[in-house]
Image (cartoon, rainbow, N blue to C red; front, side, top):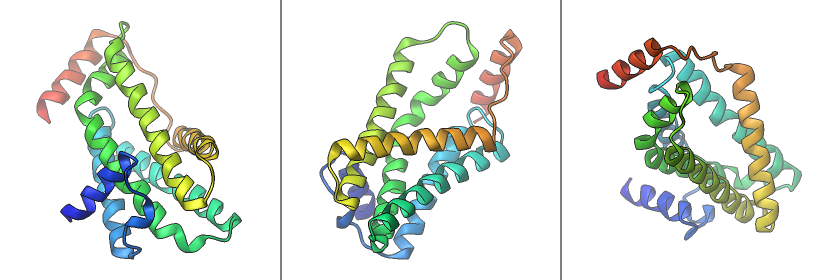
Length: 189
């Protein structure tokens, strides 16, 4: 398990490729579970358990479909397990890095004053996600990095759109009570 996590970190740092992962279904499901658990952990800071589950499942399914269609178009479906394993495993790595910043990020959503540092950190994490996804797509689909970046951005936008269709973000009441409720939820975690 440690070797697998190490591989995910190496792919996240662009030092390894999806082909370095075992092409086993068990490893795929482990990476999906890691991505789901870390994703839910991050979303529970702000969303209910139900909302967190719906959003996490959507965030896992949309890229899987996108990847499968892209691989099918190039007749490379046999690469799906390794590629999707890499996508889920690296997502878990990024989520773990993001977790310490998420409470402040969600607090910034409900606040009228935004913490610029947190906004920049989240932006950097989003850029990192796009670059890592592009790296995975580049090596999986045998395309250039620019094409990988374009596809990664398209995948991210498509995922965000579908998430908002499936589970729209509730309008936020900017009253002080929301902030107090949010802080009490953080303290209870």
